[in-house]
Image 1 (cartoon, rainbow, N blue to C red):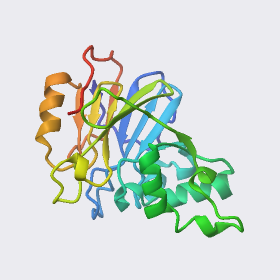
Image 2 (cartoon, rainbow, N blue to C red):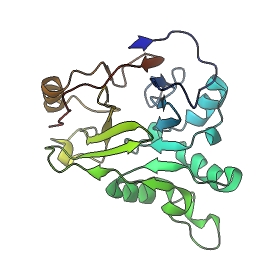
Image 3 (cartoon, rainbow, N blue to C red):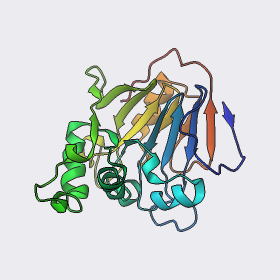
Image 4 (cartoon, rainbow, N blue to C red):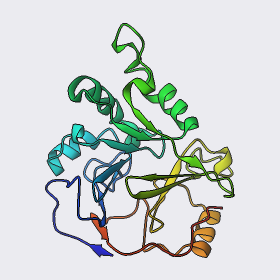
Length: 241
């Protein structure tokens, strides 16, 4: 693993095959200086933005010289504004500026939540015939892994293996991930465990320690600006509890 501290002035949408990660921000929902915890990934010819908060279009353009319309692929971990607030711009710019739908990796259950509770209000009535989610997005549907104890979904996206595992984020009264609002973390290429926002979850930590030794583990507390991982996959598969 290589961690670069050199300033990144423009995002590279392709590379030579290494797994590169750029944290566009490491701040909280209310941060005014550190941007929001949105993660950009690129590997070979594929790029992916994990979460797109309300500050994300601005930080992409001003900090990384990259307009939001350059981003083709999205994955969203949960519906707080610092993770979904930039999606209305992404979907409407795709339809009316770019003239091409962006792609979202999303489960069927979360698609309904995201559309009905966050994205529908600013998009549905934009035209004479009401728009739907699939009018604005190309959908990649990860498959559910039946043998996992915790709801986990997997897709191979342009050479990047992604496992989406449910997390225990909110409300604070929820006793487990099962009773929490929909949220997920992402295991990237069996090497990077990115929890996104989550409460302390001993079951997740204990199981990840037992079943995987990731070469890099990142949460909202991480301050790494960029990570490049050219190595091979772990031999042991991750098994979320």
